Amino acid sequence: MAESCSDHLVITLDGPAGVGKTTLARRLAAELHLAYLDSGAMFRAIALRLGEGSWEWPAERIAERLSGMGFSVTGEGADTVMAVDGKPLGDEIRNERVGLMASNLATLPVVRDFLKKAQQDIGRVCRLVAEGRDMGTVVFPDAPCKFFLDATPDERARRRQLQLKEQGEDVDFDTLLVQIKVRDAQDRNRAVAPLRPAEDAVIVDTTKLSIEGVFLELVKHARTSCMK
Ligand code: DC
Image (tube, rainbow, N blue to C red):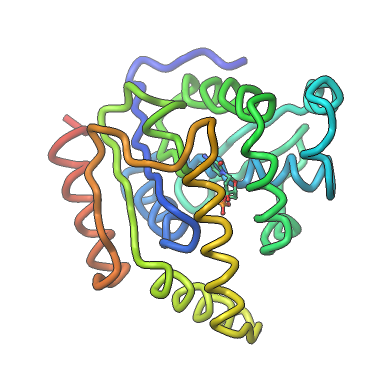
């Protein structure tokens, strides 16, 4: 493991699926010259490695399969690269099937404990914008700067549809809305580390705001409150 750094800083950015966290976390990290920790990508990488139905395995079998898995983060901002066992993660984790598998595995303490340690190890290394569901509540409870982004399910489904369209995929709005609601229910209601704002988080309802507006708000707050 790398040495911890003297000017250590973690900014957390949590919120539900489709709220725009990834875009904002990457931009915030680039603007502030911090690395970007995509914790959802770690759950997705595990989902891809363990496969369909693995969330029903006994905890010992899951632990055994996870034990050799090493995560690392290099670079900063949008150029941050996350690797598993030295191999950079690619677009193979970026689809709704893997997202839902990740959400299923994320209900299990054995998976969460394993990733919490991996995330804290990465956080010790240096300066980070950490994005996910429980970054401010569980993984980095002492972070000096915490944000929680939210938006209505309809607005998030609309944004996701637009994003997919830009990637050349036409997906029906109602299908996306159902997917978002299923993941919301699972992420918010699970027994371990449910999605919720930390008590000291700045909550931003982005429903009626542009990405640019939210970005400027986050930068302003981060610069004035936690980058002294
Ligand atoms: O942010 P994402 O859509 O890539 O995350 C995929 C799933 O992983 C999400 O539905 C729930 C889980 N997750 C989690 O439980 N805790 C995190 N910190 C990040 C993701």
